[in-house]
Image 1 (cartoon, rainbow, N blue to C red):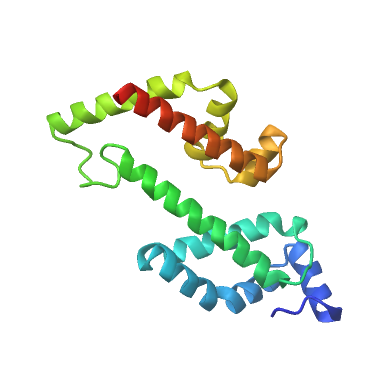
Image 2 (image 1 turned 180 degrees about the vertical axis):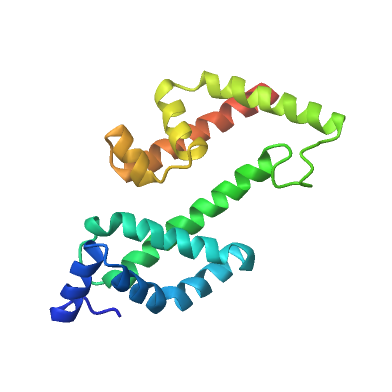
Amino acid sequence: MGQEEGDDGAARLRALRARDSDAWDDLYHDLYPRLRSFFLRRVGPTHAEDTVAETMTRALAGIDRYVPGPSGLAGWIFGIARHVGADHHRRTARQRAVPGVGTSGSGFDPPDEAAVLGDEHASLRAAFDRLSRKDQEVLELRVIAGLSAEQAAAVLGKRPGAVRMAQSRALAELRRILEYADA
C-alpha cells in the first residue's frame, strides 16, 4: 500500500484520479481496518463508520491535489482523517452547546435553564459584535461554519498558519471582552 513509487503506484494513482471505482474500492479495503481503528479511539464506535466514510469522501474530492511524498498515499489520507476527527469533535462540542441539540433529545430545556442560556447567548453575541470585522470573519469561517484552516485560508486569501494565528488571537480577544463584561 505505502509504495507510490514505480509503475504500480503510478498506475494506481492514475486510476484514482480517473475516479476508477475499482481502484477506490481497493484503496478503501486496504485502509478501512486502520482507519476504523484510528477512529474507534478518537470518536468511538457510534461515529467510526461515518468518519471513515467522510475521510474517503474528502480523499476522493482532493485526489487531484495529492502530491506523492515520503508519507505516501496512506499518510496523506490519515492527514485527512485527523482533520475529519477534529471536525467531528468541534461539531459535537457545538451541538452540546446549543440548547436541545445533543442533550436529552427532547429539544426542550427547563424554563430557568433556557433563560440562563438566553442570557449567555446574548452576552456572547454582544461580545462577538465588539470584535473587529476581521476577527469576526475568521471566527465565522472557522468556528461557526466549521471550515478547516486550509479552507478558511483559501476563502480569505491567507496561509493556513496565518488563519490559525488570527483565530487564536480572535478567541483571546473574545475571552478578554467576556471577562471584562463579567467584572
